[in-house]
Length: 273
Length: 312
Image 1 (tube, one colour):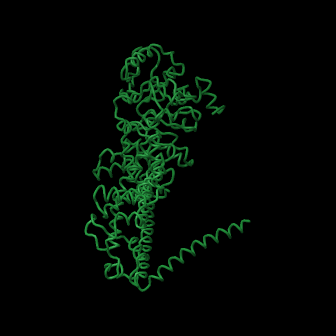
Image 2 (cartoon, helix red, strand yellow):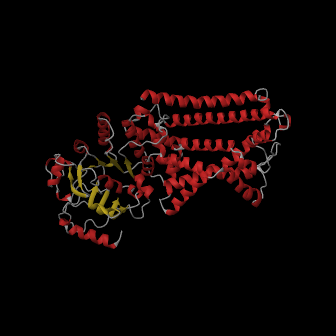
Image 3 (cartoon, rainbow over the protein chains, first blue to last red):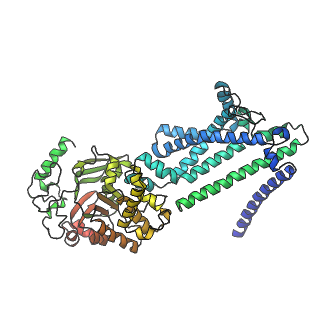
């Protein structure tokens, strides 16, 4: 019986890995001949994706810059200051509901509110605001979880040394929760990089290098979508796969960075979970 | 403090028999602990304890009592967890609190630096005076906690370097001077008998130390605040016998500079480190007096039963 279970589990793990490897191999084989270092640094007119890389970076940076402080602040409030009153329970319910809403709805909301009502038009800033709202629940929840995992004895220790509550939070609790917070930020970045529907609605399709964040742009995912959907040149399909390859590489880099950053924090703080 | 309290305390002086549990009756053993003569001899001195209870009737060695608790009741919601506690602590004195689990020792010790403030349902009545000042009155709570340090049951160093742990409290109070911080950290670690073991790894994480070292680090961290009183809540219960021995030795050293209140479940520890012992049972202070007497000739039957292991 044990052997059977072991076999089944090994088989499912093997299956998952096989599928992953197949996808990766497939993407990079289709992209071969197109994917190169210069592909990343050429403009779209020359068959490259430089503007898309830049737009993606802009969108990521701006949306994280908006959502991280707001998200951490909300999480600190929920974990450290709030009681379990009805209002707080309602807040939590709202956050959980937000997390479950399909991203296209956020896109629609962003299009109406940020692009039209606030007059940003289709632009990186409108997209960043939209995506910020979308990733806030992720950041709040993971940050709150990591704050809660900081032992209460840390707070007591800090208070007993004459520190105020806010000092305890900023100097002891938050640093101890840093690994969880960094992880939440990286997860959020991953979602922003991979998101397409709300970006298409709010950032637009402009394939030039954006000069400011108030211009429209085209992220890697949108470029990919556009190329496969409306392929006009025979090369477009290959370029689409090369773009997909760049996306995969970006995601891999982000994951590796997470490991390095959290690993360093762990070493610095000693062995706490 | 309100009028009633003052009145009650003045009255209390005249009616010594009111609190049956009050241990002050065991007067006169001036030889053993000169620095800690039995406080509040109930004989005479009717109004002696009105305001700052520093007059120690008739003793030549008249220290001000460092900490003075009168008529303390503590409630968790509707539950009366501490009943009418009278307690005092002299400078350079070590007092051990003993009693079975759940008797209110830890609750009581947390009254003294207002850590119970963290529990919303907790409220107290009565007075707790530090050098004659009501700690539940206008005194700033962060100020109080830097004067009354605390060491917890489980070592709880922060996830930062050894140095930063010790410097933490003073930094939070705004001390930035690097040299003064370094001196402070060194002298605190020396006092906590930890310096020789960590002087080469001050930058290392405090969590890489052993349990006993971590607890001494926590003591050093309290010392760095230059407190007047150190509260210890079962500081050795998570440690092995050798680490425990070192902490007990350390307590003997520390009482030269500080007053110490230590909660302990180990009778031998109480008898080794303390000058006076307070026995708690079901939220009441049953007996409070000279450690030797509490252990060899307890006045209350319940104390005797507990010490001889008949319950608890």
